[in-house]
Length: 260
DNA sequence: GCGACAG
DNA sequence: ATCTTGTCGC
Image (cartoon, rainbow, N blue to C red; front, side, top):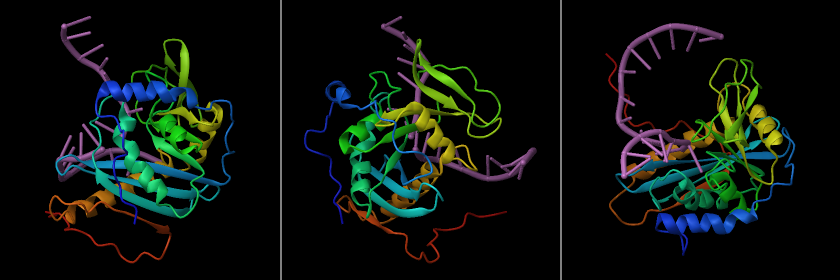
């Protein structure tokens, strides 16, 4: 069981956090193409919050890149380390995400984050930050344009439009389903933009969002629910779980809402 | 100075 | 992110 604690020296103020970004930004590797889509493993990470109870839960779900079958998964629960501040999302999500990744029984391969990488006010969003800290290839797939602009991609799945910060292309709006709102892809670390888009398409055979994101989202929410219900007070109870995919019996359900 | 703003 | 019922569509 991995204990989830906020790292020593983790910034407490916005100014300190921005300074950390400025100090690490230079370590991002942008000249690697990254692993080819459909090969190796792809891992989705996501985080859910309970601000009331000061709880945060992260999940890492490893998929086989070819079949998209779940190979392994892990979760971690901890205390909220930073408030949500646009541009500083990484400081809120990374400690718990790192714990979940550490709890995995196998290497993650390419990591797909919710949010941005290079598409960031200081070119160091969540995906880039996580990549630099772990050394892993990472990409960011966000649901919103954030502060950036773009024209609408053409209607068919696979169409793209540059995501711009002024005239600089910081990412790409990518249509993953015909006629459905695009997702916003940016490079994190050790992956090229075209390859990041190709991976995103490979991960969206049936939905707008990547399977990695969908699986990780469902898992971290479940982990948060369970942590909140077991939240017997204000003590520790910070834990993480992991494992290969074992036989899962029927899941425990809270209470079906009243259906008129 | 006043908004806008990944999750 | 999170609060939330039903509803339209593939």
